[in-house]
Structures are given as C-alpha cells and as structure tokens.
Length: 206
Image 1 (cartoon, helix red, strand yellow):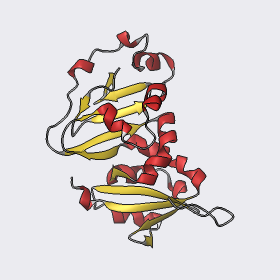
Image 2 (image 1 turned 60 degrees about the vertical axis):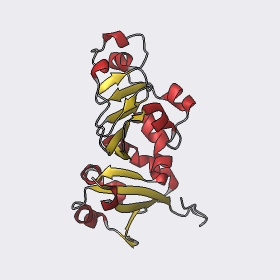
Image 3 (image 1 turned 180 degrees about the vertical axis):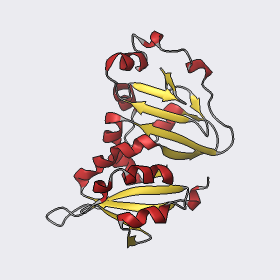
Image 4 (image 1 turned 30 degrees about the vertical axis):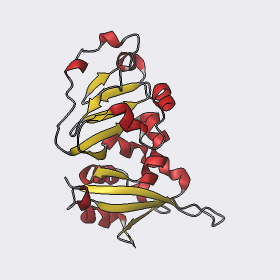
C-alpha cells in the first residue's frame, strides 16, 4: 500500500474527549519502513515513549502474536507489535515480560520472524492505559490506519462522532453518514486531531 493514497480526516473535539479515541489504537497504527527496525529505537522515536516509560509502563509485549520479554530485537515490514500495561490475573502474570511466571507460557518467542525484507508497514497496537496515555500525542501527530479498521471503529461508536465532535475532510465538514461512503474506497486513512475552542474562546489548535 502506498501512503500517498491515504485520505486525511481531521477530528475537531474538546481536549478532554481525545481519550475517547483510545480504543482506536487497538486496531493498529501503520508505520512505513524500508527494512527491519530495532523495536526499542522505533518506539523511542514516537511521541511520549521514553526509556523510562517503556521500562515502567509497558509490561506486556507481543511480537507477531507471541509474548516477548525484550524490546531489544528487530521487526520488519509486515510485522505487528502490541503493547499493554500489566494485564490482570494469571494470564497477565504469565504474559508479563520478565515476570516470575513467564516460564509457564508457550515457548514460541524464539521462532518469531522479524518480518519481510521488502518495504512495507509495521503495525503498532496499543491497549488499556498505554493507549489512553499516548493517544493525545499520537493523534496530534496524526496516525495512519487501515480505512476498514477505522470505519469498523466508527460504525460501532456513532455517539462518539456527534457534536461537539466534528470531522473535516478536504477542508470541508464531513457528516458522520457521509464518512463511510467517502472512505470506503480508499485503503488507508490518516487521522489527526485539533482541539476546539474552550468556553473562553481561547482553545488551542494542535
């Protein structure tokens, strides 16, 4: 897929509403890469991801569907990286990286492939508090996502797109109902946010 074909939609909303879009990050943000990238370096280049944040907050890591204990490895085009805070219960204890119960998980980590060597996309999925903490900065920067995934998200959350939330496409308001027709013919969509004015009229635009 070529990123130049992506359609650009801006979501204008009150600042406190941006975390309503946290679960969108579960669907996977796409990042174009030419070759395998070092996972830790890739994450540190994203807004809000510091070494301290990764060590303290990212407690569960899945690489191509397999639990991993380390971010010190490579992931190539076609690969998927999922990050989560600590998960509850025994499952959370088993999948927690470098946890006491990690020996109970299936030992498939060593067989995980780094991905393709041809240019393509890495998919980053964020869950629970990782998603809610990082969504303001990531969406201010703009996220690239599969349009089908975005429409699936939007189709289940019509109330989320009602006023005061507004959509803008090609410089014009995009009604919720028209969004599906507008985006269904494109493989990719770039979503970013701008904050609407506050009650004093001095709102900040990102």
